[in-house]
Length: 603
Image 1 (cartoon, helix red, strand yellow):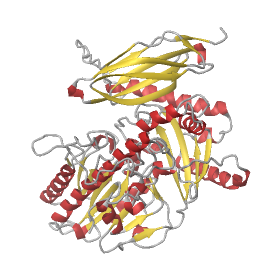
Image 2 (cartoon, helix red, strand yellow; image 1 turned 90 degrees about the vertical axis):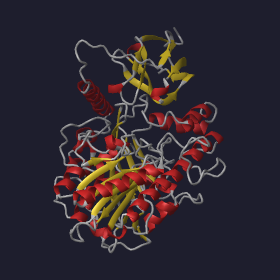
Image 3 (cartoon, rainbow, N blue to C red; image 1 turned 180 degrees about the vertical axis):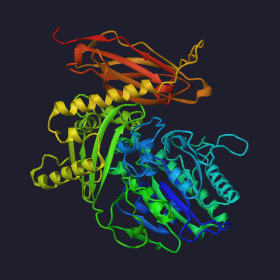
């Protein structure tokens, strides 16, 4: 039957050991991480043998042409899926713990319905806080050794153990298996201990239109597509374990990716390829093989209500999402003409709020953070493709425009995604699109009113630049305050263990409207493996962010940091900061300069 799943799969299984009714199947959720929908064969990838397992799965049942997740980053996006609520209503707007979530989670819903719940992979990002009340967590092998998240065999083993544990408990189950590929780090080449079934070369890979054809970009894409192949291997192992359990024909499978590829203009965005996901559902006896839904637009916020309908779990009317189980059963459903998308914050607590409305043809994006100087903090600035873009933009006018959009954007964007899915041609100022632009604005306004979005008062006054800026500054302040509040107090009488992994001498003199650079040396102990560095340029006495870079380093080395100094910085001052670690609260090291007075070229 099926041997692989689209980026996120939900498999509903009917255990042979129980007497549960056929309309109350078990649930298995399988996700792949950071994968474009069009990176697999069933959704148009031209690479041979890229995804035989995922293709087999999605073609075995119903797959959707117009499915989207809400946001192009992990923890906020996954919590939408499993709460049935938009980020501003489930309170998980970024990468932080929400100890008292306002809405029930998939775990709560399914346990209340009598299901055994288990998870393997992405455990801390799949719930509002961690540890959560799963019945079992299979992130380690039976001896307690952590599974290697790039090892396909580990996913098969975790799946088998989860099914066996549910059988022992005598309950139907809801099991979530989250595959780490093709999330970075990508496939490492011939020395990688976990070789994909298919390794692709730079001259073979397709280059997405939102990127640019260049040898450096192709090399990075080759590693990405090879990692997609390995994610397919993982899905194959999961489906093999399901088949070996004897539950295959008693299983509903829902498969999708959590968001787009971890490269510029895809991840940490709301563009078409940021959120388009290869959603597919296999439900034995209900769905028909080789069925493609081209009529309805569905999104991640609808997943939990749909699972509840499929399994007969108790309804929670406060959820924002709407079940599409009737579509899965072969019927049509009204009011499926558009989806709404929402972005608030990245893993470094940078607030760059955005909202979007997408139909089959048009995508409207609202960026209140865009003020001409603020730089968007995205997870893809550490990629080779971004660094190549920044380097070539110095001499290539067209790439300079792309870099400008990448960093600063504009307040409103409008794209004909049917003709321009790469979102290259902004139509916001073209007169012939005035009516459809206004229609999208009104749809977004109505959605904000219906869901009580905290952006609503500002959006009603969206043409006022001061109102937009006041909203963003308030959101940034709330984020900073939350970070301070969530810091864990240190035990009295102890001193924090200092773990220096980098050193830098910040510039002491800077000139407005010029590029400043300084050297950063890193010496990461082997025990720490790879460490993330967040490098920031700030302005003014209050240290408002101007630009931010996120990179990953390991071992010893040196790199050169470059920033463009604003032509008129706030208070006439800038400062520099670097911190190391997965998040600011648990950082390994932090350096921050004193404010530096900016000189002007005519001084």
